[in-house]
Length: 256
Image 1 (cartoon, rainbow, N blue to C red):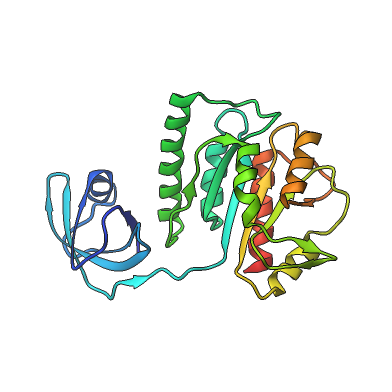
Image 2: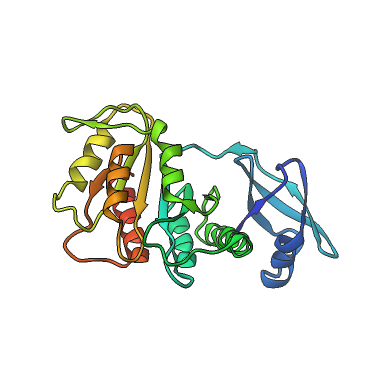
């Protein structure tokens, strides 16, 4: 069954407007009596049945119990902006792989540095891509996409929320922060994820991927001092978009 994401809260009667109504009526050829799964921005989900159509509007009624989307392990992907429109692919695939938040960052070696107007346009496009990907893969939630900002500012924000590894044990006092570093030689990712999975704590993982050219030495020191754990994706050097998809796939497999 197809699904849509609504800005308004799901209730007994729902009016679908805007692009969602146009997509349902013209692209999906929706008709009276058709049903669809709806998810609202408050985390509620239900089955709706179309009862009437008007210009740019579809009227629907709720034909199931309204339930709350179950909270699961939270995964944040922070990725330094790559060149061209590669971040579009990262947003799409990260959404399909179940990420909850996407943080676009600027690092020392980031080449793409959009100004305020272009940044706003990019955020609008990324949110549209995430919504389309979520509907396509039948997700119950939309990922949150943060503002484009400097990696140092982001690190200062998350540092107080992180847990730490002490003598190979995760203390469970916050999120697990993994940064994938091409110069890391230890084959430690599986062991770290197993230790984290067995920890009796709230499950939240932050994954950080570097830009073309990798992290600078200054950034590596800053990331580690903030609580980041350096891990490797193997001996080959991956492109930043490939690394993001690979890292998310491994983490999802190990913890879910």
